[in-house]
Structures are given as C-alpha cells and as structure tokens.
Length: 570
Image 1 (cartoon, rainbow, N blue to C red):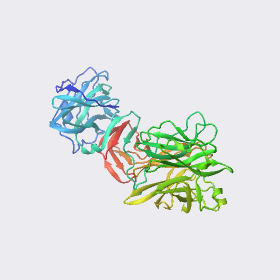
Image 2: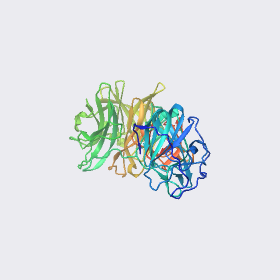
Image 3: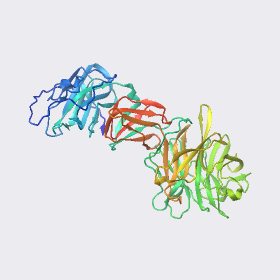
Image 4: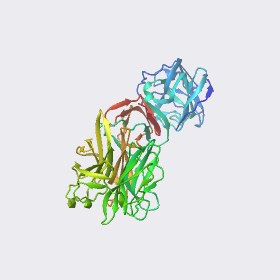
C-alpha cells in the first residue's frame, strides 16, 4: 500500500563503515547472474555522491554502473531495523521518479526492503515523498517508482524500515545501483494509490471519447455484473434499462418484479450520482394500476425540461400488449403514475393495429419537433406484417402515423440515440432477440438503418438470455450499454448487466515480454481492471483508442505492483 505525506527530517549524510566480519553468517559479494547489463534512461540525472547508514559492502557500489558490485548494510537478526541509502546530484533538479537496482539471486531480489520511505532533499532538509509497505519481491531489472508529484531536489534518501533477507537469511538492505530523473510522459499516466488487490491494477479515466463510428470495437464487461439486481424479499426479475443523463447524475429506469411477489410488472428508477459506481435505492414510478403489466419503458428528457416515456402496457379486454405514454416534470413523479387505458398511443396507417402485439419494443426518439416510435409486432402473422422494426411518427406524442419498416430483420428494437461525427449524423439502434447476443445498426437518418452487426454476446451463464438493452450516452459520447439478462429461457430471472466501451490498456514486461490487458474488466464506464499473474513487474503501459488498435500513449519504463491505481491523463 502506498501512503503519501509531507514532513521534514534533518539531513543525514554521515555513513557508518563496517568490517566484513560479523556475528551472522555472511554471503560473499557476487555477480548477479540473472541480471542484465545496467541500462540507464536518457532522462536519468547523474548521481554524484552516495552515503548510507552502514556499509558491510562499500557504498560506492551504488553509483559505479556495475551490477556485479553491491552495497550492503550490516546484517541483522530481525526485520524491524532501520537502514538507509542516500544519493545526490550536482545541484537541484526536477525529479518525478526514482530507481533502485536490487541485488538478485536465483529466486529474485535479495536484501530488498519490504517497507520503506522515499525522501527528497530541498538542500537543507529531507522531505517525505512516499511510503511503501508490503512491497513485493522484485524478480528482475530496475525498480522504477513514480513519485506522487515532481519535486525540485538535489538528492534522494531511501529509508528501509522493514528489511528483506539475503541468501543466507540475514536481514539486510542491499542494492546494486540507484538513480532518479524526470520524464514528462509520466504526467499523462499517474500513480494515484494502491488498494492492495492481489495481482490486479486499476486504470482510471480510460472511458470512451467523442463518438466515432470507426472506433466502436473495444468493450469490457463490468466486473460486478449484474450491476443492478431486484430488491430482496420477493421475486427477482428486472430488465428493460433506459438511461437518461440528468445533470451530473443518471436516472436508470427499469421494469419487472423488483422484489415483489404478485408477478406483475412495474416501472422503477434508481439514480447513480457517481458515474455508475453506486446506485441509490429503487423508487417505484409507475405502478400497474388497472393493467396486468407495465414495463419495457424508454425515457427521454426534452429541451423544455419535460421527461417523456413510452412503455408496454398489458391488460384491457381482450388483453394485449400496446404502447402507452407518460410525462413528468422531474423524472420521478409521472402522469399517469399507474396503468391507465386512457394513456395508450393511437396509430394510423398500420393495418390491424388493434390486433398488434407490441411487446417489449416501444422505442421513443425525439428530434426537431417529431416523436419517433420504433416497435415490433409479435402478432405479425395475424396482422399481415413482417416481423421487422416498424416506424411511426407524431407531433404530439400520442397520435402516430405508420411510415413503414426501418430495418427488415427479425430483431426487437430497444433504443435509438443520435450522434454526430465529421458534421454527419449517425443514429445508433440497439436490438436483441432473447438470445445470447445484442446487435446494433447505424443509420444516417431516423428512418434509414444499415444491416445489423453484433454488439456483444453474453459473458457466461448469468446473462445467457439477453432480453433488453439501453445505451448510456451523453454529450455526443457513447459510454456503453446496460442490458437485462438472465440464466433461464423462461426469461423470468433477469438482472441488469453492463458493458462499457473503453480505451484498451496493455502492460508489457521488459524482462519477459509477458503481456497483461488482453482480458480486462470494467468498473463503471471510466475504469478498468488489468489482471496480472505476478505481483511486480517493470515495463511499459500502452493505451489504445476504443478501436483497440490506435496507439494513444506509451508510458516510460515503470514498475507496477499488485493493487496499483493509475490515472490516464491525455
């Protein structure tokens, strides 16, 4: 775990010599057969002098560019002893990383501290820059640690407070070389903490950017999936997410059995104030009323501040699914607040509308004074229509005229959102067919959509049957998609899952060429979890755009450890 603080300590530059004879058994100094040739960075600052708290082996080894010569403190019988090494430059300079080259044996670093603090000199005092505890044993090469912020300093002191062991089990502090420097590229990829999570790094601020239809390839499942589940105490079956930005918050509407026991669908909302990291308690917004079910809502907030909703209502005589509407001034209190046959949409021009079974597809899109309805008819064999995505328009949100089919595929429309790119408009439609995949289509107008493409498949058994979806969008950015899914073909054990469109991050080890990041998990739209198979490695981070192939950033060489939290700052 990395802790940060600032305090002052009087400069100590004396060093204590020691004979090689000691009470403990002592290993003779030797070349590090597993270590590569000492390589310095072009951004390193030359070290001009060194000192140490004690010297079983000469402190001059810290700056001789020879990995076969080692500085060692005196040995100890327990780990809880303080030893330090310090080094200076020829005057004050900017520093944002420090380096240590450990002594290596056949199993990794020897005599490398488990806990230590890093101090920087302002010319008269040592100032605490960082503290590391439970530091994993390095395996090969330099340990390169980014400082919390750049400092103007003429020297570095590393104070070990929990010592590591040498190859004969003495507790000791040993290093082959030391260094420090300044690399401006660290400004774009900052270490901001450590959460002690085993063999995992977290990368923040890695979400999608402004919409680009050519960069929609890199999607990551949320590691918490499902991200929203029904309230306890009853049946658990919620789906049909519709997401609407509301200032700095997001309203996530959904329908189903939210911990109820009567088997009737209702529409609820939960709010996230922290960009999908947590969700507030669920609030029922539209009860079933005289209807059997109220579900499959889509919600928009228009420029006049009014919230508008289409939904599926099932009831009446004879009972059949039909789209209804509701409005609200705040997104919570709706009219109607329960199922009411007086709030059904009217349709002109669609033959046999009274027999149409419009279930699970009531997509509302509003543009330029026109309301667009995208819908499917599950009774198409009786009404004489194809099973396709149908389209109708209205100027009052109630009385619609059928215009024809916008996508002649057997898919259920779920959401339509508009984006712009290079002064052109793009309309993104989400669709499913109660299978293990979501599909999307990109249109050039509200009525012209291209053949569908696969957006995602299920992750595992928990989301085997995908029943609904809603895009997460704001300010011409596609964040991701929430989707209702469950493990059974009866489609009555659903929860809400998430998949986010994000930049891709890889880490490649300098020593072994091992690569991490091919499998990533998201934690909300702007964070990813990068999985490791070691506790520590030195190499480079690579950040790619959401197409997964356009390289945006390469970090300087740096050491990553289990639990590190980084922030990308383009």
